[in-house]
Length: 232
Image 1 (cartoon, one colour):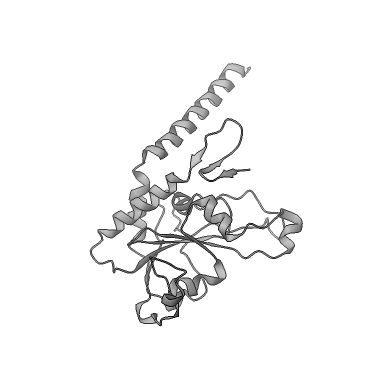
Image 2: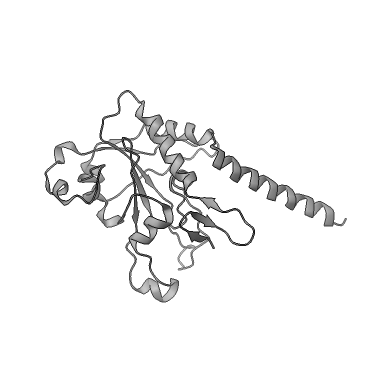
């Protein structure tokens, strides 16, 4: 179970504490790479869908959740059923969280408020997933909460949505394309994002290299322990 602080999260004990700066820098690099794209309009939003909660066959048992890799690379979110948006021009980030029922409390504990997720994941704005169409329709990079700006009719200036769609050549499977109620009202680009974000993920930052060095060390120590204690 991850433990969170204002600066990041960790898995407890002597495990590495990962700063949210790692994911913020990833978003920044992605926006910088997309900004140089010659055909991209001034109002363009990256839309990513996180992994969804699933159950084992017809039961209510949920297998251990693993986040969708591109979504985790951008936001560091560990919970299921989130969506995320990033304004290419400004780098402003939005998380959309599921609106959980009150019955959730009985089984899983207190439901976190949007402002808590804003602090945990160090993003600019947090809304519920059932608000995504309205938020994106009236998105103003300087302030999503500007009521005067939201009251203006800007349907003719809806942002272009860059969604993830591409083939994983190792598995032969395609990335899950983001979807939400009302997405058909927007112009959607399915070709630009995948090659750019894939290239960004290949080139590691110093913060990512620190995580890789840690995981390599732990893996090596585990292999040495097994080899030292194994018996024929």
